[in-house]
Length: 587
Image 1 (tube, one colour):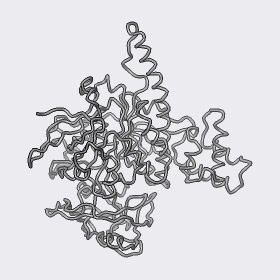
Image 2 (cartoon, one colour):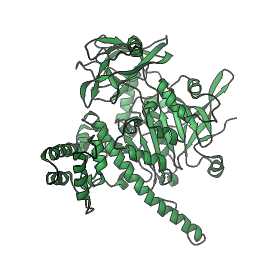
Image 3 (tube, rainbow, N blue to C red):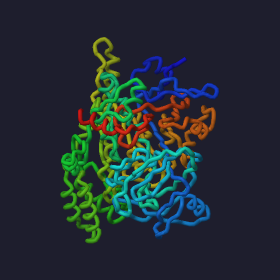
Image 4 (cartoon, rainbow, N blue to C red):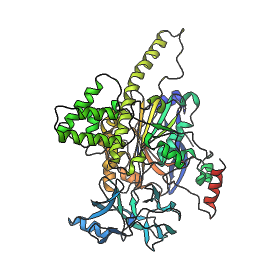
Protein backbone atom coordinates (compact mmCIF):
# COMPACT_ATOMS: atom_id res chain seq x y z
CA UNK A 1 0.00 0.00 0.00
CA UNK A 2 1.44 3.38 -1.05
CA UNK A 3 1.33 6.21 1.50
CA UNK A 4 2.83 9.69 1.80
CA UNK A 5 6.00 10.18 3.86
CA UNK A 6 6.30 13.72 5.26
CA UNK A 7 9.74 14.68 6.58
CA UNK A 8 10.07 17.26 9.37
CA UNK A 9 6.40 17.27 10.38
CA UNK A 10 5.05 15.56 13.50
CA UNK A 11 2.10 13.16 13.36
CA UNK A 12 -0.10 15.77 15.08
CA UNK A 13 0.77 18.39 12.43
CA UNK A 14 0.24 15.88 9.63
CA UNK A 15 -3.26 15.24 10.96
CA UNK A 16 -3.85 19.00 11.18
CA UNK A 17 -2.34 20.23 7.89
CA UNK A 18 -1.89 17.12 5.73
CA UNK A 19 0.51 17.84 2.84
CA UNK A 20 -0.17 21.58 2.82
CA UNK A 21 3.11 23.51 2.95
CA UNK A 22 5.26 20.54 1.85
CA UNK A 23 7.33 19.87 -1.26
CA UNK A 24 8.08 16.62 -3.07
CA UNK A 25 11.75 15.64 -2.64
CA UNK A 26 11.74 12.04 -3.84
CA UNK A 27 10.38 8.52 -3.47
CA UNK A 28 11.10 5.94 -0.80
CA UNK A 29 12.99 2.75 -1.53
CA UNK A 30 11.06 -0.26 -0.23
CA UNK A 31 12.75 -3.67 0.02
CA UNK A 32 10.74 -6.86 -0.29
CA UNK A 33 12.95 -9.92 -0.14
CA UNK A 34 15.79 -9.40 -2.61
CA UNK A 35 13.87 -6.77 -4.60
CA UNK A 36 14.22 -3.02 -3.99
CA UNK A 37 11.70 -0.71 -5.66
CA UNK A 38 10.53 2.91 -5.54
CA UNK A 39 7.23 3.29 -3.74
CA UNK A 40 6.05 5.99 -1.34
CA UNK A 41 6.34 9.66 -2.35
CA UNK A 42 8.51 11.59 0.12
CA UNK A 43 7.61 15.20 1.00
CA UNK A 44 9.43 17.72 3.18
CA UNK A 45 7.80 20.33 5.41
CA UNK A 46 8.81 23.87 4.42
CA UNK A 47 6.08 25.83 6.22
CA UNK A 48 7.92 25.45 9.54
CA UNK A 49 11.54 26.29 10.34
CA UNK A 50 14.24 23.66 9.96
CA UNK A 51 17.97 23.07 9.73
CA UNK A 52 18.68 20.76 6.78
CA UNK A 53 22.13 19.28 6.21
CA UNK A 54 22.88 17.80 2.76
CA UNK A 55 25.93 15.57 2.49
CA UNK A 56 27.43 14.51 -0.82
CA UNK A 57 29.89 11.94 -2.10
CA UNK A 58 33.46 12.69 -3.12
CA UNK A 59 34.67 11.82 -6.60
CA UNK A 60 37.77 9.63 -6.75
CA UNK A 61 40.53 8.15 -8.98
CA UNK A 62 41.88 4.65 -9.47
CA UNK A 63 45.03 3.76 -7.49
CA UNK A 64 47.37 3.97 -10.50
CA UNK A 65 46.52 7.64 -11.13
CA UNK A 66 49.67 9.78 -10.94
CA UNK A 67 49.83 13.05 -8.98
CA UNK A 68 52.24 15.85 -9.96
CA UNK A 69 54.43 16.58 -6.91
CA UNK A 70 56.03 19.92 -6.11
CA UNK A 71 59.53 18.35 -6.20
CA UNK A 72 59.12 17.60 -9.90
CA UNK A 73 58.38 13.91 -9.43
CA UNK A 74 55.13 11.97 -9.83
CA UNK A 75 53.54 9.44 -7.51
CA UNK A 76 50.49 7.17 -7.73
CA UNK A 77 47.59 7.47 -5.31
CA UNK A 78 48.22 3.92 -4.09
CA UNK A 79 51.86 4.80 -3.33
CA UNK A 80 50.71 7.97 -1.55
CA UNK A 81 48.60 5.89 0.85
CA UNK A 82 51.57 3.67 1.73
CA UNK A 83 53.94 6.62 2.17
CA UNK A 84 51.44 8.39 4.41
CA UNK A 85 51.14 5.31 6.62
CA UNK A 86 54.95 5.31 6.96
CA UNK A 87 55.04 9.00 7.93
CA UNK A 88 56.46 10.30 4.65
CA UNK A 89 55.18 13.73 3.55
CA UNK A 90 54.49 14.92 0.03
CA UNK A 91 53.53 18.28 -1.49
CA UNK A 92 51.40 18.85 -4.59
CA UNK A 93 50.44 21.75 -6.84
CA UNK A 94 47.14 23.51 -6.10
CA UNK A 95 45.29 26.56 -7.41
CA UNK A 96 44.70 29.27 -4.79
CA UNK A 97 43.40 32.78 -5.50
CA UNK A 98 44.03 32.19 -9.23
CA UNK A 99 47.70 31.29 -8.71
CA UNK A 100 49.44 27.89 -8.81
CA UNK A 101 50.96 27.18 -5.38
CA UNK A 102 52.34 24.26 -3.37
CA UNK A 103 50.39 22.52 -0.60
CA UNK A 104 50.87 19.56 1.74
CA UNK A 105 48.98 16.36 0.89
CA UNK A 106 47.08 14.96 3.87
CA UNK A 107 45.02 11.86 4.55
CA UNK A 108 45.31 9.87 1.30
CA UNK A 109 42.95 6.89 1.56
CA UNK A 110 40.99 4.17 -0.19
CA UNK A 111 37.53 5.72 -0.54
CA UNK A 112 35.50 2.94 -2.16
CA UNK A 113 36.00 -0.63 -3.29
CA UNK A 114 34.71 -1.77 -6.66
CA UNK A 115 33.30 1.56 -7.80
CA UNK A 116 31.91 2.35 -11.25
CA UNK A 117 34.53 4.24 -13.24
CA UNK A 118 34.90 6.08 -16.53
CA UNK A 119 37.98 6.38 -18.77
CA UNK A 120 38.77 9.82 -20.19
CA UNK A 121 41.14 10.22 -23.12
CA UNK A 122 42.48 13.74 -23.58
CA UNK A 123 43.91 15.75 -26.47
CA UNK A 124 47.44 15.47 -25.00
CA UNK A 125 47.17 11.64 -25.26
CA UNK A 126 46.80 11.26 -21.49
CA UNK A 127 44.25 8.80 -20.06
CA UNK A 128 42.53 9.10 -16.67
CA UNK A 129 40.19 6.63 -14.98
CA UNK A 130 37.95 8.05 -12.25
CA UNK A 131 34.42 7.97 -10.87
CA UNK A 132 31.92 9.65 -13.24
CA UNK A 133 31.16 12.39 -10.69
CA UNK A 134 34.72 13.61 -10.17
CA UNK A 135 34.93 17.29 -11.00
CA UNK A 136 37.53 18.78 -13.36
CA UNK A 137 38.36 22.47 -13.36
CA UNK A 138 37.70 24.31 -16.61
CA UNK A 139 39.82 27.18 -17.91
CA UNK A 140 37.21 29.68 -16.65
CA UNK A 141 37.70 28.17 -13.14
CA UNK A 142 34.25 26.56 -12.98
CA UNK A 143 33.92 22.79 -12.56
CA UNK A 144 32.36 20.00 -14.57
CA UNK A 145 31.90 16.32 -13.73
CA UNK A 146 33.91 13.75 -15.69
CA UNK A 147 30.82 12.22 -17.32
CA UNK A 148 29.68 15.66 -18.60
CA UNK A 149 32.96 16.80 -20.19
CA UNK A 150 32.79 17.66 -23.92
CA UNK A 151 35.31 18.58 -26.60
CA UNK A 152 34.35 22.24 -26.23
CA UNK A 153 35.42 22.25 -22.56
CA UNK A 154 38.97 23.59 -22.30
CA UNK A 155 40.42 22.33 -19.02
CA UNK A 156 42.54 24.23 -16.50
CA UNK A 157 46.13 22.98 -16.48
CA UNK A 158 49.36 23.94 -14.73
CA UNK A 159 51.08 23.46 -18.12
CA UNK A 160 48.93 26.23 -19.65
CA UNK A 161 48.22 24.17 -22.77
CA UNK A 162 44.68 23.83 -24.09
CA UNK A 163 43.57 20.33 -23.10
CA UNK A 164 40.16 18.84 -23.82
CA UNK A 165 38.55 15.40 -23.72
CA UNK A 166 38.37 13.51 -27.02
CA UNK A 167 36.78 10.28 -25.79
CA UNK A 168 34.79 8.95 -22.80
CA UNK A 169 34.31 5.26 -22.06
CA UNK A 170 32.33 3.81 -19.15
CA UNK A 171 34.32 0.80 -17.91
CA UNK A 172 32.67 -2.60 -17.52
CA UNK A 173 34.95 -3.62 -14.66
CA UNK A 174 34.65 -1.85 -11.30
CA UNK A 175 37.82 -0.65 -9.56
CA UNK A 176 39.01 0.49 -6.13
CA UNK A 177 39.26 4.29 -6.00
CA UNK A 178 41.32 6.70 -3.89
CA UNK A 179 41.36 10.33 -2.80
CA UNK A 180 43.30 12.71 -0.54
CA UNK A 181 42.86 16.15 0.97
CA UNK A 182 44.45 19.49 0.20
CA UNK A 183 43.81 21.97 3.06
CA UNK A 184 41.83 25.14 2.20
CA UNK A 185 41.88 24.88 -1.63
CA UNK A 186 40.51 21.31 -2.09
CA UNK A 187 42.02 21.01 -5.58
CA UNK A 188 45.22 19.46 -6.92
CA UNK A 189 47.14 18.82 -10.14
CA UNK A 190 47.37 15.40 -11.76
CA UNK A 191 50.47 14.15 -13.58
CA UNK A 192 48.83 15.41 -16.79
CA UNK A 193 48.73 18.93 -15.29
CA UNK A 194 44.93 19.00 -15.05
CA UNK A 195 43.38 20.56 -11.93
CA UNK A 196 40.70 18.45 -10.24
CA UNK A 197 38.39 18.86 -7.24
CA UNK A 198 36.18 16.81 -4.96
CA UNK A 199 32.44 16.51 -5.78
CA UNK A 200 29.75 18.56 -4.03
CA UNK A 201 25.98 18.15 -3.78
CA UNK A 202 24.24 21.30 -5.01
CA UNK A 203 21.66 19.32 -7.01
CA UNK A 204 19.44 18.44 -4.04
CA UNK A 205 19.61 22.00 -2.73
CA UNK A 206 18.38 23.29 -6.08
CA UNK A 207 15.50 20.80 -6.04
CA UNK A 208 14.35 22.15 -2.67
CA UNK A 209 14.45 25.71 -4.04
CA UNK A 210 12.32 24.58 -6.99
CA UNK A 211 9.79 23.02 -4.63
CA UNK A 212 9.46 26.24 -2.64
CA UNK A 213 8.84 28.19 -5.84
CA UNK A 214 6.06 25.79 -6.83
CA UNK A 215 3.99 26.14 -3.65
CA UNK A 216 0.46 27.63 -3.78
CA UNK A 217 0.54 31.43 -3.75
CA UNK A 218 -1.12 31.75 -0.31
CA UNK A 219 1.83 29.84 1.22
CA UNK A 220 4.61 31.01 -1.12
CA UNK A 221 3.86 34.67 -0.39
CA UNK A 222 4.98 34.08 3.21
CA UNK A 223 8.26 32.39 2.26
CA UNK A 224 11.49 33.58 0.69
CA UNK A 225 14.51 31.50 -0.29
CA UNK A 226 17.99 32.95 -0.67
CA UNK A 227 20.69 30.84 -2.32
CA UNK A 228 24.08 32.12 -1.18
CA UNK A 229 25.92 30.98 -4.30
CA UNK A 230 29.65 30.60 -3.57
CA UNK A 231 30.31 28.47 -6.67
CA UNK A 232 28.41 30.36 -9.41
CA UNK A 233 26.11 27.50 -10.43
CA UNK A 234 22.54 28.58 -9.65
CA UNK A 235 22.05 31.09 -12.48
CA UNK A 236 21.19 28.07 -14.68
CA UNK A 237 17.88 27.75 -12.81
CA UNK A 238 16.59 30.38 -15.23
CA UNK A 239 16.57 27.63 -17.89
CA UNK A 240 14.51 24.41 -18.25
CA UNK A 241 16.17 21.04 -17.67
CA UNK A 242 15.96 19.88 -21.30
CA UNK A 243 18.90 17.54 -20.71
CA UNK A 244 16.78 15.30 -18.43
CA UNK A 245 13.40 16.03 -20.01
CA UNK A 246 12.36 12.38 -20.37
CA UNK A 247 13.32 11.54 -16.79
CA UNK A 248 11.45 14.59 -15.46
CA UNK A 249 8.37 13.53 -17.42
CA UNK A 250 8.55 10.04 -15.89
CA UNK A 251 8.22 11.69 -12.47
CA UNK A 252 5.01 13.41 -13.53
CA UNK A 253 6.02 17.01 -14.22
CA UNK A 254 7.45 19.16 -17.00
CA UNK A 255 10.75 20.95 -17.40
CA UNK A 256 10.44 24.71 -16.95
CA UNK A 257 12.53 27.77 -16.06
CA UNK A 258 12.41 29.41 -12.65
CA UNK A 259 11.96 33.13 -12.17
CA UNK A 260 14.99 33.54 -9.93
CA UNK A 261 16.35 37.00 -9.12
CA UNK A 262 20.13 37.04 -9.45
CA UNK A 263 22.12 39.63 -7.52
CA UNK A 264 25.77 40.15 -8.47
CA UNK A 265 28.32 42.30 -6.55
CA UNK A 266 28.10 45.83 -7.91
CA UNK A 267 31.69 45.82 -9.18
CA UNK A 268 30.97 42.85 -11.46
CA UNK A 269 27.36 43.57 -12.43
CA UNK A 270 27.95 45.63 -15.60
CA UNK A 271 30.81 43.37 -16.70
CA UNK A 272 28.43 40.39 -16.43
CA UNK A 273 25.80 42.28 -18.42
CA UNK A 274 28.26 43.09 -21.20
CA UNK A 275 29.44 39.46 -21.36
CA UNK A 276 25.86 38.15 -21.46
CA UNK A 277 26.12 36.30 -18.13
CA UNK A 278 22.64 36.16 -16.55
CA UNK A 279 22.21 38.67 -13.71
CA UNK A 280 19.33 40.92 -12.69
CA UNK A 281 20.50 43.40 -10.05
CA UNK A 282 23.73 44.68 -8.48
CA UNK A 283 24.11 44.40 -4.73
CA UNK A 284 26.42 46.11 -2.26
CA UNK A 285 27.05 46.27 1.48
CA UNK A 286 27.41 49.29 3.75
CA UNK A 287 30.74 49.62 5.61
CA UNK A 288 28.58 50.78 8.55
CA UNK A 289 27.22 47.22 8.90
CA UNK A 290 30.69 45.65 9.23
CA UNK A 291 31.82 45.54 12.85
CA UNK A 292 35.50 45.63 13.93
CA UNK A 293 35.56 41.89 14.62
CA UNK A 294 34.36 41.19 11.06
CA UNK A 295 37.11 43.33 9.57
CA UNK A 296 39.78 41.67 11.72
CA UNK A 297 38.58 38.19 10.76
CA UNK A 298 38.47 39.08 7.06
CA UNK A 299 42.01 40.51 7.26
CA UNK A 300 43.32 37.67 9.49
CA UNK A 301 44.25 40.15 12.22
CA UNK A 302 44.19 39.75 16.00
CA UNK A 303 41.55 42.19 17.39
CA UNK A 304 43.90 42.91 20.31
CA UNK A 305 46.90 43.73 18.11
CA UNK A 306 47.87 47.31 17.30
CA UNK A 307 46.21 46.92 13.89
CA UNK A 308 43.04 45.43 15.41
CA UNK A 309 42.79 48.23 17.97
CA UNK A 310 43.13 50.84 15.22
CA UNK A 311 40.33 49.23 13.20
CA UNK A 312 38.09 49.16 16.29
CA UNK A 313 38.80 52.79 17.10
CA UNK A 314 38.17 54.01 13.54
CA UNK A 315 34.96 52.01 13.05
CA UNK A 316 33.51 52.99 16.44
CA UNK A 317 34.32 56.64 15.84
CA UNK A 318 32.53 56.73 12.49
CA UNK A 319 29.59 54.67 13.78
CA UNK A 320 28.78 57.00 16.68
CA UNK A 321 26.53 59.23 14.60
CA UNK A 322 24.58 56.29 13.17
CA UNK A 323 25.07 57.79 9.72
CA UNK A 324 26.30 55.64 6.85
CA UNK A 325 29.81 56.22 5.52
CA UNK A 326 31.91 55.18 2.53
CA UNK A 327 35.15 53.21 2.35
CA UNK A 328 36.97 56.45 1.45
CA UNK A 329 35.73 58.06 4.66
CA UNK A 330 36.85 55.02 6.66
CA UNK A 331 40.30 55.15 5.06
CA UNK A 332 40.54 58.88 5.74
CA UNK A 333 39.67 58.31 9.42
CA UNK A 334 42.46 55.73 9.73
CA UNK A 335 44.98 58.13 8.17
CA UNK A 336 44.01 60.80 10.71
CA UNK A 337 44.49 58.54 13.75
CA UNK A 338 46.76 60.20 16.32
CA UNK A 339 47.40 57.21 18.60
CA UNK A 340 48.86 54.70 16.12
CA UNK A 341 52.33 54.66 14.59
CA UNK A 342 52.96 55.21 10.90
CA UNK A 343 53.56 51.51 10.10
CA UNK A 344 50.30 50.37 11.76
CA UNK A 345 48.34 53.09 9.92
CA UNK A 346 49.93 52.09 6.60
CA UNK A 347 49.02 48.43 7.15
CA UNK A 348 45.34 49.19 7.86
CA UNK A 349 45.07 51.73 5.03
CA UNK A 350 46.43 49.05 2.71
CA UNK A 351 43.89 46.50 4.01
CA UNK A 352 40.95 48.88 3.57
CA UNK A 353 42.17 49.87 0.09
CA UNK A 354 42.20 46.17 -0.74
CA UNK A 355 38.64 45.82 0.61
CA UNK A 356 37.60 48.82 -1.48
CA UNK A 357 38.92 46.92 -4.51
CA UNK A 358 36.45 44.13 -3.81
CA UNK A 359 33.85 46.53 -5.25
CA UNK A 360 31.09 45.34 -2.98
CA UNK A 361 30.84 48.30 -0.58
CA UNK A 362 28.79 51.44 -1.03
CA UNK A 363 27.46 54.11 1.28
CA UNK A 364 23.84 53.21 0.49
CA UNK A 365 24.04 49.41 0.30
CA UNK A 366 21.29 47.12 -1.03
CA UNK A 367 18.19 47.01 1.22
CA UNK A 368 17.62 43.52 2.61
CA UNK A 369 13.92 43.78 1.74
CA UNK A 370 14.91 43.70 -1.95
CA UNK A 371 16.83 40.46 -1.52
CA UNK A 372 14.40 38.80 0.90
CA UNK A 373 10.90 39.18 -0.56
CA UNK A 374 7.83 37.00 -0.15
CA UNK A 375 7.42 34.41 -2.91
CA UNK A 376 10.86 35.16 -4.32
CA UNK A 377 13.83 32.88 -5.03
CA UNK A 378 17.00 34.97 -4.84
CA UNK A 379 20.49 33.95 -5.92
CA UNK A 380 23.16 36.02 -4.20
CA UNK A 381 26.15 35.30 -6.43
CA UNK A 382 29.46 35.73 -4.60
CA UNK A 383 31.39 33.43 -6.96
CA UNK A 384 33.21 36.34 -8.72
CA UNK A 385 35.62 36.34 -5.78
CA UNK A 386 36.77 32.77 -6.51
CA UNK A 387 39.91 33.95 -8.33
CA UNK A 388 40.61 36.95 -6.10
CA UNK A 389 43.14 36.91 -3.27
CA UNK A 390 41.36 36.11 0.02
CA UNK A 391 38.33 34.97 -1.98
CA UNK A 392 36.80 32.84 0.77
CA UNK A 393 37.40 35.59 3.35
CA UNK A 394 35.34 37.97 1.18
CA UNK A 395 32.57 35.38 0.74
CA UNK A 396 32.54 34.77 4.49
CA UNK A 397 32.20 38.48 5.20
CA UNK A 398 29.24 38.80 2.82
CA UNK A 399 27.49 35.69 4.15
CA UNK A 400 28.09 36.74 7.76
CA UNK A 401 26.61 40.22 7.23
CA UNK A 402 23.55 38.89 5.38
CA UNK A 403 22.89 36.27 8.06
CA UNK A 404 23.33 38.63 11.00
CA UNK A 405 21.15 41.39 9.51
CA UNK A 406 18.49 38.87 8.55
CA UNK A 407 18.42 37.33 12.04
CA UNK A 408 18.01 40.75 13.68
CA UNK A 409 15.18 41.75 11.33
CA UNK A 410 13.34 38.45 11.78
CA UNK A 411 13.60 38.74 15.58
CA UNK A 412 11.86 42.13 15.43
CA UNK A 413 9.29 40.88 12.91
CA UNK A 414 8.50 37.84 15.07
CA UNK A 415 7.53 40.05 18.01
CA UNK A 416 5.11 41.96 15.80
CA UNK A 417 3.65 38.72 14.41
CA UNK A 418 3.11 37.25 17.86
CA UNK A 419 1.41 40.43 19.06
CA UNK A 420 -0.98 40.37 16.09
CA UNK A 421 -1.78 36.70 16.74
CA UNK A 422 -2.52 37.35 20.41
CA UNK A 423 -4.49 40.49 19.58
CA UNK A 424 -6.62 38.60 17.04
CA UNK A 425 -7.30 35.86 19.59
CA UNK A 426 -8.33 38.43 22.21
CA UNK A 427 -10.71 40.04 19.69
CA UNK A 428 -11.83 36.83 17.99
CA UNK A 429 -15.08 38.14 16.52
CA UNK A 430 -13.93 41.63 15.60
CA UNK A 431 -10.51 41.04 13.99
CA UNK A 432 -9.27 38.71 11.26
CA UNK A 433 -5.87 37.03 11.22
CA UNK A 434 -3.76 38.49 8.41
CA UNK A 435 -3.07 35.96 5.66
CA UNK A 436 0.08 37.66 4.34
CA UNK A 437 3.04 38.28 6.63
CA UNK A 438 4.79 41.64 6.47
CA UNK A 439 8.19 39.95 6.68
CA UNK A 440 8.39 36.47 5.05
CA UNK A 441 9.87 33.42 6.71
CA UNK A 442 13.26 32.77 5.15
CA UNK A 443 15.11 29.74 3.85
CA UNK A 444 18.87 30.33 3.53
CA UNK A 445 20.81 27.83 1.41
CA UNK A 446 24.60 27.57 1.38
CA UNK A 447 26.82 25.21 -0.61
CA UNK A 448 30.43 24.30 0.33
CA UNK A 449 29.37 25.08 3.92
CA UNK A 450 32.54 23.61 5.44
CA UNK A 451 34.49 26.54 3.97
CA UNK A 452 32.45 29.13 5.89
CA UNK A 453 31.65 27.10 8.99
CA UNK A 454 34.79 25.02 9.59
CA UNK A 455 35.21 22.55 12.41
CA UNK A 456 38.56 24.12 13.30
CA UNK A 457 39.15 27.85 13.14
CA UNK A 458 36.73 30.67 12.43
CA UNK A 459 35.55 32.83 9.53
CA UNK A 460 33.63 36.11 9.40
CA UNK A 461 30.47 34.02 8.83
CA UNK A 462 30.94 31.57 11.73
CA UNK A 463 29.22 33.48 14.55
CA UNK A 464 26.20 34.52 12.45
CA UNK A 465 25.70 31.01 11.09
CA UNK A 466 25.99 29.41 14.53
CA UNK A 467 23.44 31.88 15.89
CA UNK A 468 20.98 30.83 13.17
CA UNK A 469 21.77 27.15 13.76
CA UNK A 470 20.98 27.46 17.47
CA UNK A 471 18.31 30.17 17.57
CA UNK A 472 17.09 30.80 14.02
CA UNK A 473 14.03 28.53 14.09
CA UNK A 474 12.22 30.64 16.68
CA UNK A 475 12.15 33.82 14.51
CA UNK A 476 11.43 31.79 11.37
CA UNK A 477 14.79 31.27 9.63
CA UNK A 478 15.53 27.89 8.06
CA UNK A 479 19.02 26.89 7.02
CA UNK A 480 20.13 24.45 4.30
CA UNK A 481 23.81 23.59 4.46
CA UNK A 482 25.49 21.38 1.84
CA UNK A 483 28.95 19.85 2.02
CA UNK A 484 30.87 16.89 0.63
CA UNK A 485 33.11 16.95 3.74
CA UNK A 486 31.03 16.58 6.94
CA UNK A 487 34.23 15.70 8.79
CA UNK A 488 35.44 19.27 8.19
CA UNK A 489 32.30 21.16 9.24
CA UNK A 490 31.45 22.65 12.65
CA UNK A 491 30.00 20.07 15.06
CA UNK A 492 26.96 22.32 15.72
CA UNK A 493 25.75 21.45 12.22
CA UNK A 494 25.51 17.80 13.29
CA UNK A 495 23.80 18.47 16.60
CA UNK A 496 21.35 21.15 15.40
CA UNK A 497 20.15 19.58 12.12
CA UNK A 498 16.66 18.10 12.34
CA UNK A 499 16.77 16.82 8.75
CA UNK A 500 19.83 15.25 7.15
CA UNK A 501 19.97 14.12 3.52
CA UNK A 502 23.03 11.96 3.03
CA UNK A 503 24.15 10.64 -0.34
CA UNK A 504 26.69 7.83 -0.40
CA UNK A 505 29.83 8.65 1.60
CA UNK A 506 33.26 7.28 0.82
CA UNK A 507 35.63 8.80 3.38
CA UNK A 508 35.97 7.13 6.76
CA UNK A 509 36.26 10.46 8.59
CA UNK A 510 33.02 11.65 6.97
CA UNK A 511 31.12 8.54 8.07
CA UNK A 512 32.47 8.99 11.59
CA UNK A 513 31.44 12.67 11.59
CA UNK A 514 27.88 11.78 10.58
CA UNK A 515 27.97 9.16 13.33
CA UNK A 516 27.23 12.05 15.71
CA UNK A 517 23.69 11.88 14.32
CA UNK A 518 23.24 8.24 15.29
CA UNK A 519 20.08 8.03 17.36
CA UNK A 520 18.51 5.21 19.34
CA UNK A 521 15.72 4.93 16.75
CA UNK A 522 18.18 3.65 14.13
CA UNK A 523 17.65 -0.05 13.55
CA UNK A 524 21.13 -0.56 12.12
CA UNK A 525 24.42 1.32 12.04
CA UNK A 526 24.79 4.50 10.01
CA UNK A 527 27.39 2.99 7.70
CA UNK A 528 25.16 0.01 6.97
CA UNK A 529 22.18 2.27 6.22
CA UNK A 530 24.18 4.26 3.68
CA UNK A 531 25.97 1.26 2.16
CA UNK A 532 22.64 -0.50 1.58
CA UNK A 533 21.52 2.28 -0.79
CA UNK A 534 21.08 1.30 -4.45
CA UNK A 535 24.16 2.37 -6.40
CA UNK A 536 22.36 4.86 -8.62
CA UNK A 537 22.58 8.63 -8.95
CA UNK A 538 20.37 10.55 -6.55
CA UNK A 539 19.99 7.81 -3.95
CA UNK A 540 20.19 9.01 -0.35
CA UNK A 541 19.10 8.34 3.21
CA UNK A 542 17.04 10.97 5.01
CA UNK A 543 17.28 11.31 8.79
CA UNK A 544 13.95 12.67 10.07
CA UNK A 545 14.36 13.72 13.70
CA UNK A 546 10.73 14.91 14.01
CA UNK A 547 9.50 11.34 13.51
CA UNK A 548 12.67 9.53 14.61
CA UNK A 549 12.85 7.63 11.34
CA UNK A 550 15.34 6.99 8.55
CA UNK A 551 14.16 6.70 4.96
CA UNK A 552 16.18 5.40 1.97
CA UNK A 553 15.05 7.54 -0.98
CA UNK A 554 15.64 8.42 -4.60
CA UNK A 555 15.78 12.23 -4.89
CA UNK A 556 13.57 13.67 -7.61
CA UNK A 557 15.07 15.12 -10.80
CA UNK A 558 15.35 18.89 -11.24
CA UNK A 559 12.97 20.67 -13.65
CA UNK A 560 15.49 23.51 -14.08
CA UNK A 561 18.97 23.24 -15.55
CA UNK A 562 21.65 22.21 -13.03
CA UNK A 563 24.88 24.19 -13.32
CA UNK A 564 27.04 21.68 -11.45
CA UNK A 565 26.39 18.65 -13.61
CA UNK A 566 23.27 16.57 -12.97
CA UNK A 567 22.25 12.92 -12.57
CA UNK A 568 20.56 11.51 -15.65
CA UNK A 569 19.07 8.19 -16.71
CA UNK A 570 19.01 9.24 -20.37
CA UNK A 571 21.71 7.95 -22.72
CA UNK A 572 23.37 10.64 -24.80
CA UNK A 573 22.39 10.79 -28.42
CA UNK A 574 24.59 12.21 -31.12
CA UNK A 575 22.34 15.19 -31.71
CA UNK A 576 21.43 15.61 -28.03
CA UNK A 577 23.22 18.91 -27.38
CA UNK A 578 22.18 20.49 -30.67
CA UNK A 579 18.55 19.75 -29.79
CA UNK A 580 19.01 21.47 -26.43
CA UNK A 581 20.56 24.54 -28.00
CA UNK A 582 17.65 24.84 -30.44
CA UNK A 583 15.17 24.72 -27.54
CA UNK A 584 17.09 27.33 -25.56
CA UNK A 585 17.30 29.67 -28.55
CA UNK A 586 13.55 29.32 -29.02
CA UNK A 587 12.78 30.52 -25.48
